Length: 280
Image (cartoon, rainbow, N blue to C red):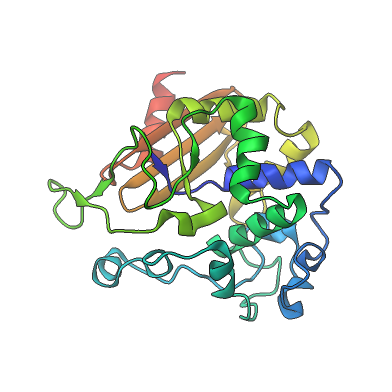
């Protein structure tokens, strides 16, 4: 089914570049995107993009379900290439001093995707296939497009006001999420990915530790890390309209919970927590 967020794949690819010596997490992104305006690129680092503290202007402007129903989903309502997405905010000034404020922002993963393309000289989709999907045999995963027919892809639905009534999702161009979330996958494929990640088949122990180091808002690189002892967990949520996903790894018990839903009728976080209590 469609996944609303895939920054985990993006952040792992960035960490692979770090291990190869091609990228320094703490150097300004000007080193990797030389055409990006100096007022931002000389002040922001890949580290700050990964943990959503860059201060770059938000690109998601839809503030409520009511507005989405009335006006659509803004940037995602018409087709855009990754370059066009970048142009939508490239000349904007920073809204916060880098490193000081957590603000979840898809723009940061658009920039990370462009860095990956620049360093590999390939499209993000090609890199994703070569570095993650094909080596792991994730045959039910890939980049989604609005016009692309994908076998067995679930349709998504949501409830607006009446909890007993579902309607079709608002039309969107999922490819506009680009490196931030233009993916489809299955629970089995996501478990393959999770096991490979924690089995150090994708990145080394040092990179995994960096990913799982919580910063502002308990956020690491593409994931939240919360709790203590047996309850310490890595958490990743994705949600847009009827497409919902949760991936939780209890770090001290090696327990993984992955749930995908094609409606917005269930709080997957609460469901996952209740499920974990029943499998102790």
